[in-house]
Image (spheres, rainbow, N blue to C red):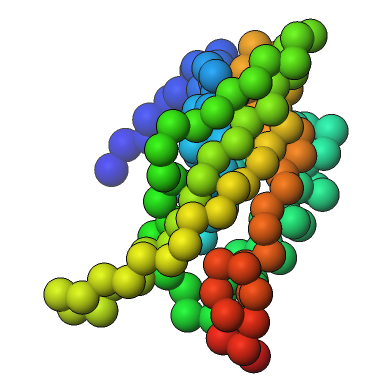
Length: 148
C-alpha cells in the first residue's frame, strides 16, 4: 500500500472553495433548506456567515431538534419560486415557501407551506445566510401536541 502525496496548495485551494459560499442568495438558502431537510450538517457551514456561524448553527440545530421531537418528515420541499429582494451593498432578503412531506409506504402526506425568510450577504466572493427567520416547527408546520 502506498502513500499518496497531495500538494499543500491543492488542499488549501479545495478548503477555500468549500468555504466560499454560494454563487447566488437563493442558492445559499436552498443549501440551508436541503441541509435542514436531510438533517446533515456536512456542507452547511459554507453557507453560514462566518461572523454569525456559531449562532446560526445553534439555531439550525435547535430547529432540527424540534423536527425530531415530532415525527421528522421524509423531506422538506420548496414550493414555487424563491423570492430574492436585492438590498444593495451585497445584501439580499430571500423568502421561500417550504412544506414538509411524509411518506408511509405508497401514501404521502403534505403539510401546509409556510414562508421561511432569510437575510443573505456576500462576502469573500460567495453568498451566505446572515439571519434565518423560520416559523415554529411545533404549532405551525405540525400540531403543537405532536412535539410532546
